[in-house]
Length: 396
Image (tube, rainbow, N blue to C red; front, side, top):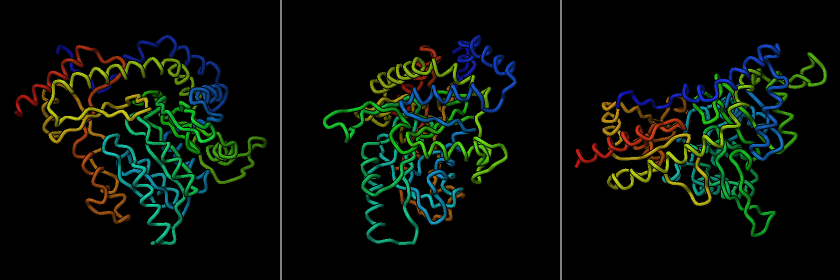
């Protein structure tokens, strides 16, 4: 190809809505209000409406969204939070930074998301035969690559064992699931990522499907007490009614007005961009299934789920060789994630061993993410598909 393919090119997105973005930036600069204020408040309302939820609280990153959510639920020393070992470190990092213990359970090999059966296995064994004095307090599922975890089962388990659920929806804004609502017998409700658990958390890191031009995050919840607590925590625990009166110990984690204004523009286009991502994912899958041997596995979409393809992630036993071949031909790829969290030096103190989570360990050796974004050209996709086919023909 004449021009080198990029894994992600955000300049196309900016150029397509340049006038609106520039106008939003100018509006904030002329207002003189850079922290909080009308832009942030309006964006919070728009996100709450988008997610179908009552409250949204802007914070300065997806990591802080998770951290403040756990703090608001009272997670601290001697607590355990169950999560996945196959994700970005922030998910488990915030648990540790609360003074609690991250507890990993294995993933579903098809979706790469936490396996509810493994959650229940852990809960059964540790409630009946407690090994420590720690208390299991919450489940923190990650909706990896743009597809939600099995929230129907996770919520059933959480209710049974009286646990909180905090959704890490950093990669899945707009993803949906047909969810059985126990209050509506024989009826299904179509719910969005972040709206099912006690709390949902989003990241607006620039590379996300809804990305800022800097850092940003959001917490969503239907619980007013939790929403009020997070508003306090994000602003030094300051009273909303009296200046310099600090009700609790908090931190500085405010979403700035400039990012909120930019995100408000982008949010209007998110459904359109998500649709384009899905179309490109379908194109990849259709052609890769017909052109490649059984060793290459395309993304699985669970029944009732809508995948928004933050990443288009294939898996193959020849991952490293395929990656090198594609890069040799000017095709960038990424590995999310090459090292499961229980192998990270930062979590050595948890004393997990090799083969403790075989599905996560296997996935880490086989996953490969291909370029996918709304502006990716058909000719570029065709080139990528052709080179993957060539690789396997050479291998055979």
